[in-house]
Every structure is written in structure tokens, then in C-alpha cells.
Image (cartoon, rainbow, N blue to C red; front, top):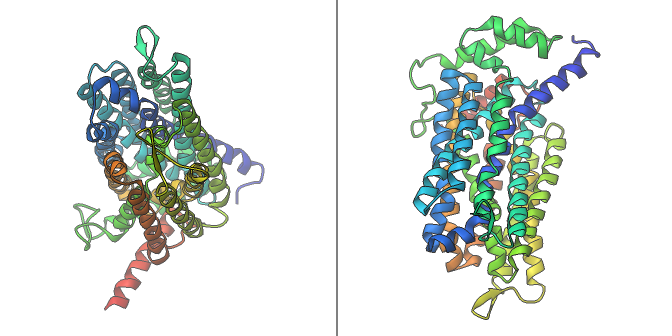
Length: 481
């Protein structure tokens, strides 16, 4: 048994590493949301249609899907830390390129490059955190990924607001003859550099090292992080999990009987898709434009977006506090109910919009109702599906396929995000009532999916969590026969 004097110091070291690993989540949130304040000036400056505006905003998500898919292979080939460094370089290049873009297609290319970086960060951060965390802290530390994302979103929206207000408008010139919206993108250079420097100082994942047979390096890491633990037993458990998963198939460890993939991979894919199909990123990508479209001024819309981001950060702390106490399933179920109610309320509120001076407006109390519902939606998502899905994705996959399976699940998440993001402008133009009603339907479906499919993994090791999913799947197959 580890001594009481060793354990607190050990936990602090692990927490510090998890926080450092989660910096990729900050860039993920920053780079994906910084476009919020730039949507309108980009549309005006480049003369874009609604569809092309949606594509320019969502183009990064194509890169995200590709980056997420490739990240697992890169992480299994070269390691988690080299993958982080590649992501940092891509973030840096994208920040400079988008800030200096001379046309919409040029901007789209640089957004795609940034998307590759986001996709890599979305896979590597939760995998790395799960693989360095002890089971009693894994849920809490896994939630740091979502916390970092929310802080990144807040930083992006806050910097957008500061630059726009400083210049007197997002489309006005600020410094060096560049418009404020360009400085919004250029601000991403700083966190990209910080992320790269942090990655250079992080130790490699112990489970990756075991996978590559580098046991002596694992012992050195354990000696620093978990000096009171049984290192040899931990190595044996990791190796046993890897060998079990490899048994019976030397090719394509992801393959299974359902449409070519293991059932556990499909669970991750569906969780990822449902997380996006509730429309959360519409709030963070289009909120400024959305609130302007129903009568709010630009400065007020930006302020509302910042307040929403702060709310998102605050409720993520709730999830962090509860995920290892209450468990994964109850939090997800609670969140699904809250999201369904909030989105349905938004649909009702927007059904009351009237036209004033050729522009839509929410009359009477319906404006505040829509704002409250939007923030209830953010609260429900941020305290549940936002962080907990990342926790589950980091812990449900077997050791041997974790990075690749996480890559596929994250790629599916980004494809779903792309579909929602690129479709929102034309759908909103068609009917906000229909759009938010559709999101409410997916929120309701998320409740059913968790209730019927997702087991509780709280307090289990990564290997035990895997076994639980496999056992549940076998039981379902036996019952079906």
C-alpha cells in the first residue's frame, strides 16, 4: 500500500501532467470558436452567400475529422508527445495564415490546416490523460479536457470582443492596417507556441511505452509519478490487456461483426455524433450572428456570447466534481433531459419572432426567454455531455486500439459537427423553429441511447471498463439468440 505521505504528492504530479496534457483542449476550443466574432465581417468583406459563409466557418471541421482519424495512427506510430508537437505546429501555421488571408478560399485552406491541429488535439489529450491517470481520479482528470475546451472557447470569445470593441467593430482596422477580425485569428499564435513548449516537457504515456516494449522507461515514469504503486503488476496488467485484444486477429484490431467495426467502437461513434447533433456548437460558432439576427446590437451579442462561455466553464466544474462520485450514466441522463427541455423552449421562443424594419425580432419577454433557454442548454450540456463523453472515450477502448478507436470516434464527432455547422445558416434562414426542434429531438434520443446501451464505468480500471463493455455486448447477443 502507498504511504499517506506519498499519495498526495503523487496525485499532485499526475494532476499537473493532466492539466498540461489538456492544454491541447484549450487550443481545440480557441481555434474552433475564434471564428464566432469574425463571421459577419468575413461575410461582408468577401461578399459571401449564406451557404458559403457556413462552409467557411465549418471548413475547419473537415480538417478536424481528418486530423482526428490520422492522430490515432500517428500516436501509435511515434507516440502521444510527437503527435502533440505536430498539432502545435499546425495551430501556429493556421493562426498566421487565417489572420493574413487575402480571400475566402485562402482563408478556408488555413482553416483546414487549423482543423488538422484541432483533430489531433481532440484525440491525443483525452487518450494521454486517461493513460497517465489512476482509476480513482480518471473521471475527474478526464474532465479537464472539456474544461480546457470551455476555457479556450471563453478566451476566443473574450478576445473577439476586446478586438472588436477596441477597433469600433470587427470589420474596422486595428493595428498594422489589419482589421480586428484578422487579429482575432492571429491571437492564436501565442497559445500554439505555449502548447508546443509544454509538450516538449511531458513524459510519454506509460501504456504507449508498454505497447512498444519499453518497460524500463515505464518504470522510470512510475518511480516519479506513482512511487508507492506496484510497477511490475501495472505493467503486467497493461500487457495482458494488449495481448487479450490482439488475440485472434493480427490485422485490423478495430474490426468486428457490426458493419466492419467492434461494437465498442460503435458506442464511441454514436456518443460522439449525439454530442454534436444537439447543436451545441451553433451556440459557440454563430451566437453573435444569431442574437444580432433577432434584434440585439453587435456589442451586446458579443457580450452575451462571452457570458455564455463563462457559464460553460462554471458548469464544467460541476461535472468535474461529480463524475467520480455520481458516475457517468446519471450525469449523461440528467444532461439529456435538461438539453431537451431547453432546446424545445428555444424552438417555441423563436416561433414568436416578428419582423421589424425587415429584420426578425423577439417581442416582449420572448427575447429573455430565448436567452435563458440558450444558457440552460449550455448548463445542461456543459455539466454532462460536454466533459463526460470525453471521459468515456478515453476509458472504454482497449489499450491496443485506444488511440485509433478514439481517432475514429473523434473523426465521427467532427463530421457531425461539420454537418450541423454548415447546415445552420440555410436551416436558420428556413426556420429556427424547425432547427431547434430537430436539435431537441436528438437530445431526447441521447437519453434513450445512454439508458439502453451505455454501462457505468465509474471506479473501474481501463482494463475493467473494457471487460464490462465486452460482457454487456455478449449478454445482449445471447439474449437476442
